[in-house]
Length: 66
Image (tube, rainbow, N blue to C red; front, side):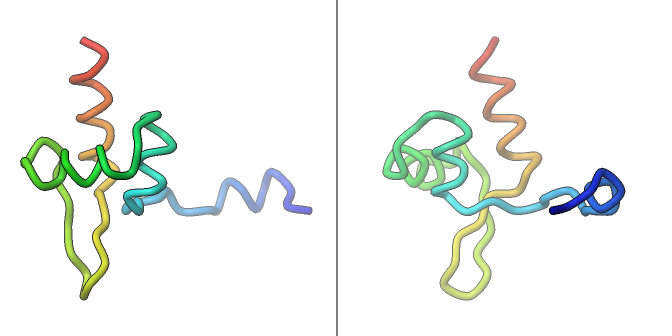
């Protein structure tokens, strides 16, 4: 079991998978991909993988809650 000291040293997450973004934002995975495709949600490609930067997810949530 991890103690609080281990959690303090854990780096913040920088990139998220679309499925994780969908869970966090309470959206379907297909909706996340549509947001990426139309430019509403910024993403990066690493090889064949698509990842969403944490700041892009934060911006999406901030805009959605206004």
